[in-house]
Length: 345
Image (cartoon, rainbow, N blue to C red; front, side, top):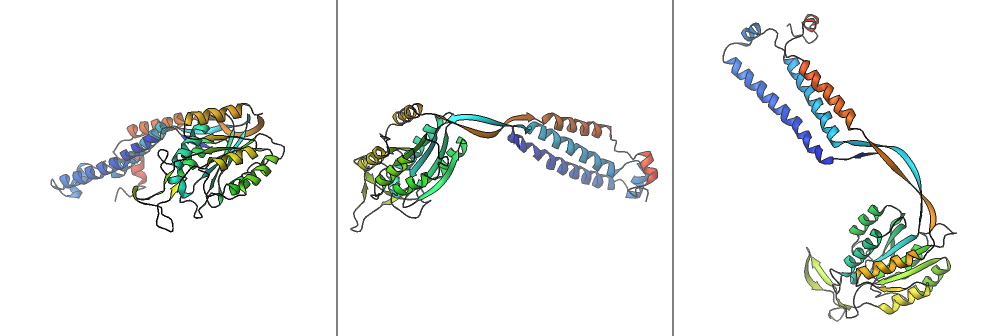
């Protein structure tokens, strides 16, 4: 396992092709200039010890020196220690509604983006709890399994949109059913499912399945995103609203927050309903809930220590730089006698 600490220094590798271009231009300029003073045979007799091979070798050595200096500046780090860290926390699964109704802009910037903001802020306030993510519309889809990697959770959150599932609707029951497979420890009681939705277009199985989930130790908390006044569902092209979703009678569809359904689901699973309009209130209420729950001890393996390796590359770069300085552009006497490169022809 390794890390690259200062990746911006990769730009410094551009020095090497610049050096090669300058060397080639200088060589061609010298050759053109020298040809104006006499023939190649005469010039060779005037400077018999001049070696093109040695000049090219010096350039290669200098390029190697620069390369190792740049790698040293990038500072590669190698993971030297794999630790098993014991943690205590709660397993939390977020089920996020990605149906088209979540595009309504009755809350800014829209319901889906508001939901993602709420989940992000909740994750930011977690300590060692594990999180998982489910996306659902007409059916539920696993997005991220239970993990302590909060950075990955936020990355998956950012990628969620209303086009990721083709089937439309609000299958909260399917999301609850899928969440039951996320919690793989039969003895675990600190399980939390947080459902974020506007509660519209659901089926009647949700409440019954919520009760079954509670029997398995899963507490469900629902967060309503939207307003009771509601709003139309925008249809956008290149980020610009071109129309609004209409029903079979060509009337603009108005989608509204259905708090009744969300409250019923939460009550059946001994949880509670939270209105999602105020982010700070949502985060505070979730924190209060988690603080009252028993924490389960679990293990999380990760690379705990990385050691700098830049000194090795700087040392090798310094060696090549000294070698370049010591190398002369003249032919070496004993190599000349060996004639390895047919330089005497």
